Length: 322
Image (cartoon, rainbow, N blue to C red; front, side, top):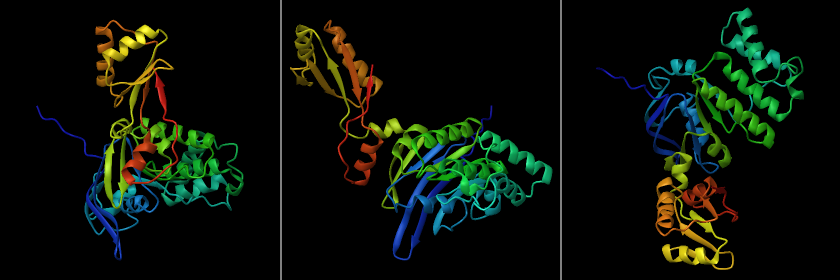
């Protein structure tokens, strides 16, 4: 029996790009499976936008084997352009015309027949909750509405792969969450999303796979949970109300840090199910039950600054109470 493996939506091997003496991308490798959200993180100037420009055919790479949508960028860039959509940091929305006219203009650029173009425009305006504002000049739209219109315009050509270069920069939290919902909906329909973002929470919420770009190279990659487990500081906290149970637990878990005042123990842990089960098994063997168990795990802020060598203001870690 013959099995076939689906080609990744995006793949890059040995991607290099320099501007004069400055190397922006120093031989990076990326693989983005079809129907997933891939997030590229990095400090400002790390090369995230350059990577998007290269993979979307706007800039030529100095070296590397690059495939997007099943096409080799060096051999058939036009086929790549037909398969992708790009929403960059700078909006493509023309503020002098209405939202509807922006959509119809985009349909004309895609050479859609007039009737089909108007139908696609109307459907996308409705999908992005812009129908009521469709007849108004885009200059009157809020930041969130302009971002939604920009993404709607990107979808006119029904691209299979979408590059979103910091799509929620400058948006208020409500508009950002609305955009996240739209992105999830796109991916649930089979679209592949390549996302760059300044918001670590955004990558944590959305991305199936994350790569951290630093000094032109991939410093680390994996799921959000995998990356968090690479950073020290995670622990399990056990709290007791019975002093006898607390003392018994401290004896059963001699490596734990003690807080005698609050009757709490703190055990270093990567937060994995395996390590958590090991702690609970030791308590069960000793016949001890904690009144409260809390898992503290590093967040992507911790990962980002650990990998890129940056400093940050200390903050309280997120907690998952179980």
